[in-house]
Image (cartoon, rainbow, N blue to C red; front, side):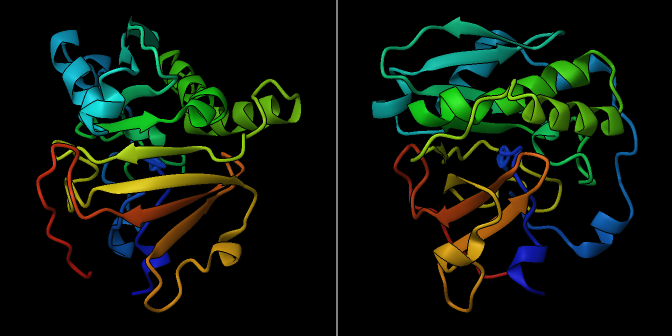
Length: 237
């Protein structure tokens, strides 16, 4: 199976992602949603004491230790700790994937992600908006439509050059099949530009997924170590 069919945007990031924040899955799961409706809100939440260190585990402590951290509440994300280096760490939930993804409502997903300053200003707002819409009870169709409207009205910022993020947490849970998948970096670029990066080609280390809802291409490059410095075993799927 071609790699691009195995990867979805993170929630998305995360992706993305969770982009993501961007995870492989069998096409059979994509054809038949496993999570057809949103679970009770409480299933997506976790204690602040647990969420803060999980968010920081997205990147090496030399980066995440000085980052701003946001945590999820019943109406959206709020800042739990202010940082000094411009990076933003949080734990993405399942709606970091596109609304068409079979995992959009999966309450198990936890995707620690740490955005660099450019992504914190210009890409994270997309996910934060989706979160507010999800928690206000909007349907997937309404979420997609409201995102498009916000882009068209320029209520969401233009994607800045050099926007990227870290997803290096050994504790990430990105889907029910691959769970913590691989440590990886993600880079964001406006439009559908996978060919410009030589992505998804034989032996190319660059994986890409175009996400029309977020109006960006999300590029993923696997890393050889988790954020704690432990080596990661890479496998070919």
